[in-house]
Each structure stands twice: as structure tokens, then as C-alpha cells.
Length: 273
Image (tube, rainbow, N blue to C red; front, side, top):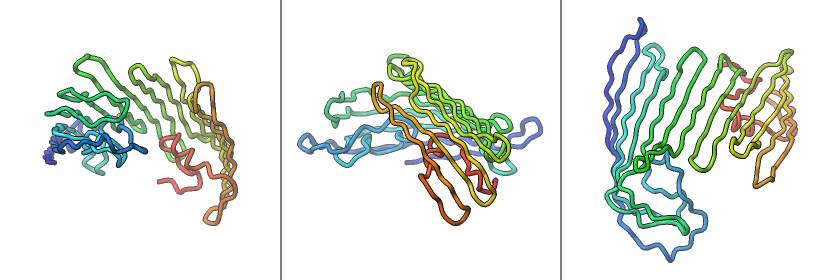
């Protein structure tokens, strides 16, 4: 695993930035071992992406270990604010080259014989005051088709105010729109919500609606959550919580659900950063 990091100052409209160029090479060699007699309890294929392309094993469990003779090449470029070091822009491209077939596979999956993986690309950063954008793209060179794409725009002017707009696409599988927010309603009341909508099926995949009230030394939360579990099947629930600052909580805790569904969510009784 080896890489380099180049930096240079860059003035744009009178503002000074640090511009980086970061190439990286990652080589893995793992010999083939027959594992057909080993039962598979909980191992599955990892989702291919930037989080997985620099890993040794394509599986997420301990029941299977792939064989590998492969090289991953990537290059990343960042634009950093020279004053506070914050990342204003990030661009990255990566691809994996296979020098041998991957013979270890799970039951029901096909053997990988391609000489190169899909091409991955991402771009993200703070594009304007209070606006953040993250976009990803997975491209299959042999077919010339996009396999996956996602786009997320986030508006966050201050703590307790956030609006997320997202779109996700996986070829032949899903096309989803995503809207999530936490916003003051006035009079110490805050509203939270999320709608994850499937475009091909024209139905709700996951939804959330909630109210929060900041009483100064205590906070009340009420959250309704609904998500799909199968064809025409949903799981629904309502959570109520009364929190006394620094002391205790009464009721079902919805904070994990709120944090997972609303990117940038902040507790309304937490001091603003």
C-alpha cells in the first residue's frame, strides 16, 4: 500500500487554498484455497465502492476468504481552506485491475472473470455558504453503462436547521428520491421528517415524522416511523421521550432513528457548535 501527497498554494479570487494531489496504489496477493466444504453461516458479498475497493477480502464474514492477485489505483484531489483547513472540494477516481480470476464465490453467485473492475468516481464539498454536495458514480467499462449513481445536497445554515435532498440509482434495481429535514417551527417547537420514495414502484420505502419541544431544562420528542419490510408489508412504530437535561430519559429513545434518517441532525438541547 503506497501513495504520495503533493500540495501547492492556490489563490482563487483573492482567497488562498491548499490544493492537493494524492495518488495511491494498493496491491493484494492471496492464493486460492478450496473452501467448498466450509459451510456459509453469515457471509455475503461486500457492496463495491470506495469503502471496499481498498480492502483485502470481498466478503464481509469469516466463512469465506477470496483469492486475489489485484492492483487498485486511485487518485484524489482536494481543495482545502488555508485558514481553517476545512475541505471545500474533493474529487476522486479509482479502479481495480485483476491479474487472475476470482475463483472463490458464494453459492448462487457468478465467478468473476473480468480483468478490471467498475470505474468509481466521486465529487463533494462545500459548494456555497451552508450548501454541501456529495455525488458518486459507478461505471461499467465493458457495457458502457452506469451501474450506480447517487447525489446528495445538504443545506445547513446553523445547528438544528438542515435540509437534505438526495437521489439514488442502481441499474435494474432501484431509483429513489430522498427528502429529510430538521427545522424550527417557532415557539421552541422543531419538526423532523423524512420521505424515501421509490420511483418505479411509486411507493414509500421509509418515512418519518416527528416533533420536538425544547423546554429549557427538558426536551420532549414524538416520532412516528414507517419502513417497508417486504412486498406490500410495512413496519410502523411511534416513539415518545421526555429527556431531563443531564439527568435521565423517560420513554423510547428516538435519537438513533433520527440520526440515521436525517443527515446533520442535532439534538436541540445540545450547545450549537
